[in-house]
Image (cartoon, each protein chain N blue to C red):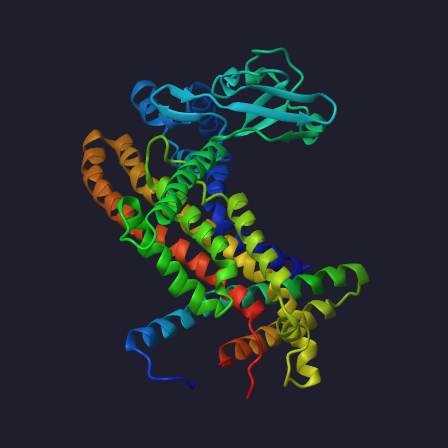
Length: 77
Length: 385
């Protein structure tokens, strides 16, 4: 946030570019939720319990993780 | 179990986004014996898949838009030029038992005949145990031998890749020579055209996303940008040497994304790895959730690069071909309907092609910019407060 006076065009460019950073965010969030849910489902298959405890737990953790990731990514700078 | 059903449904939804037409096509195959016979008639009667429009007039068989579109956006052995003319391309196969086989794709006779113990099945080479020149309907696929076969043929996409590399090398070597020969003078000819784009990649992509260390990554970023841009444009040219769907091939975008991933991982500094493995200023219990997510994100970012380019280019091709197919779908009901729809189809196809010209640039820019951004995050030095 420091530095000398900048041309408005440069500033507009920078703002526009910073939006591009977020284009992959949705994919990453969905990917994290899918990956953790699948990991839970796979582990449940290995353990063989009647109730799919790890599927539920890991899918919820995946949602929490993607939320934390969202806050961290958008909070930068 | 209900959860496994949910997972299947989710993965099916995801998959159907990209291969929806394939499923639609297979669905129609399983309708009833009568329509199965029609589908079989199309497969056995058509000289080349691209000639289905002519088949409609001559044989009165049903037009299959899904097959036409999938054939056009896919790869093939041999390059269909026009009418019944196909440019044969070398088929190179390596089988762990049979060894190397190299022959022209014309021996397959557009997928009607077997040759050298191989034949074409749904666009890919499969191994068979039949004499040369046997009709494919009388040959059975040798599953074990097919699994042991590596297809490293010079296909349509590979030829397209070679052509685009030739163009890029010719253009950029001549431009580079012009810069050394006319150092300090005003640019001329093709130099004039490319200089603003090169400067755009340098100033708006590399400098703004990477920072002071941008010069080291300029060769890769410029190569990636011009490679993707040129191949996007060549994909929009409907005739030879365009028409191949190179940047809409997931193997090509996979390699491009993989190169970005390797550059980022190799050049990542302490600051970068620190942010992935243990984000500073985050309490321990959040870290337990965040670190796996960050590690996953490390792989998901290049994965998304791969999917984005592939999906955007493929979608553009599918839309243009769908508008085109509408003419023949309506033409089957009556000639007048086909002609009437043709006017609108043509207008929409032209509009979509104009839009695709823009998309060709935007996707090349986005891929390069995001690559630069990931590199920037990897080489960034920590702030000093």
